[in-house]
Image 1 (cartoon, rainbow, N blue to C red):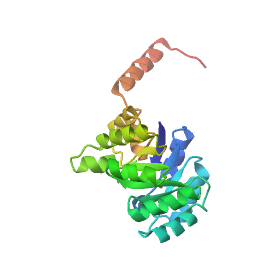
Image 2: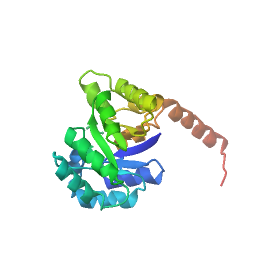
Image 3: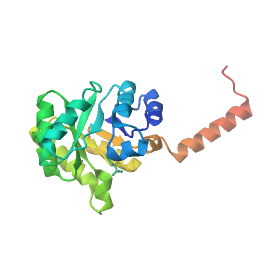
Image 4: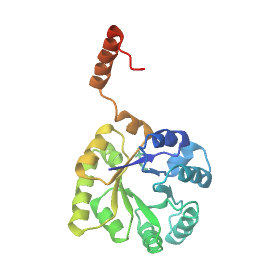
Length: 217
Ligand code: G3P
């Protein structure tokens, strides 16, 4: 399973990238706003840092302007994936940009039928939002499962990019269900390492190293 980092914070991306944990990056207008940076500048910096796909989202709602924005975004770097919303205009932009050979991430997916449309429009990635479904007492993981089944039934090669990941269990369940990619905030990715028995076991080993004065160097 690939790990994308859901942030526009350069330092956080660099830290995880050094550990080989970054297969790509996703941004959205809210994350760009949070960074306080210019979208083109910060996206270029991210693309210079990361080899994998970097999603940058359009700002328009009509297909024609989305396509023009997408064409500007892909000039930033070869690894840009243009992010478009799951609307008819977004799907039209998706079809045009993927026909031109660019990667497109269709975002704001909340149903399996929407995911089916995105795959038919040639999307490279579909982004089902798990956390936001959980927020309204629906089961985000059920959506991942349904999309996996449908894409496998018909051999669609659109990658399932589980988004709006808020917890380590969202990551685990996405992996169990066969999502191709998860995109998560840096804090969630860093939390995956936590286990109290690891901490406890290490404390015991350190105590024994001290007691027995074990030295290697
Ligand atoms: O990139 C979109 C997505 O991950 C948003 O997450 O937590 O704002 O629902 P969230």
